Every structure is written in structure tokens, then in C-alpha cells.
Length: 232
Image (cartoon, rainbow, N blue to C red; front, side):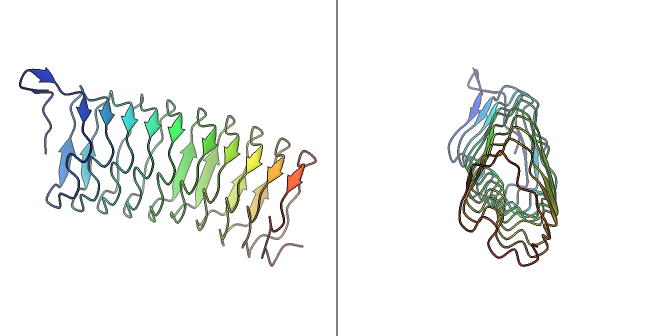
């Protein structure tokens, strides 16, 4: 599918809600430079979609826009993109590579949930919070977090394959089950600045043997390190 830049003489600036959702025949999509917004569910569950060329001027990807596009393995996000909505790429099980642009300020709930082939992610500096289940059940092994991030929400990285976590100095709160059941996790570095660690934030880490709690922590809920059987 090649989307034109003009229809009936009018500039195409938005791909509308549900525009191509559940179309099992679309293999590729080219979006013109005129488009700045793709609305929610525009390409949701396009199960044959494997190639997407986005507008370089795109600023917003809506809720569940590419959710369930199980053959999509790579997508290049444009530099001015500032918003990725709720579940935007959830269930894209072949998505193995994505670079989040520095302009990004909003990363929605469950945006990359169940992206089981995604191994690496770097969170850009303008993101201040990683929301509920953003990367839950993904294949993440390597995580880079930048200064500027203040909060990691509930179940944000639950059931991932992360091996090492180095939290930036700007982090203040780790939400409930934020890193729960990351069974490959061997090392956590908590910098001064963290003041809240909620229930089971690091629960179920069978390979974790040691951790230093910084003096800045004033609230650590019961079970924060629940079932960390190797922790001594």
C-alpha cells in the first residue's frame, strides 16, 4: 500500500483511526512526508505486514497502531517522533530492532509488551517515566537507561531476560513488580537518589546474589526482593 500525499486536492496529514486494521493482505506500507499523525489501531493486526516506511515528519503514533503485526521485524522511527501510544507495538513478536528517537517524550502503557524478539532498548533522555507493562514479556536482554528518567512503573520490565540493571541517578521510584521474575538478572546498581522501592520490584530473581541499598531509600515495601533465593 502506497498512501498518497494528496486526496481530492487535500493534503493527507493523518492516517485515521482503524484505517487498515485487521487487513491480512497488506505486506508493506509507504506513508508520505505530509503525515504527522497515525491514529489508534490504524494498522492493528495486519498479520502479513512486514515492511513500513514512515513519514520523516511523523510526530505521533497512536494507541495499538501496529499491535499484533506479527511479521513486522524492523521499523525506523523518525527523529521528530514525540509520542508512542498505549500498546502501539504490543504483540509484534518478530520485532527485533527499534531505536527510540531523542525527541520522544511519551511512551505509552504496554507499548512494547510481548515483543518477544526485542533484545535491546535504549530509553532517550526526555522520557521521565516508563509506564505500566511497557516492556513486559518482551525478549529484552540489554537495557540502557539515561539520566532524566525518574520513575519505572508497575510491571514495566516484568518477565524479561535482562541480565544487568544500572539505574541512573535521576531515578526516585521503582514501581510494584517493575523487574519481577527477570530470572537472568545477576547485577543491579542502585544509585543515590532512589527513595521508593515498591512490592516485588525485584522479586523472583533467582540469580541475584548481592545488592547495596543506597541511603536515599526511605520506603521499601514488604517483598521488594521476594523470592530472590540466591541473595545473601
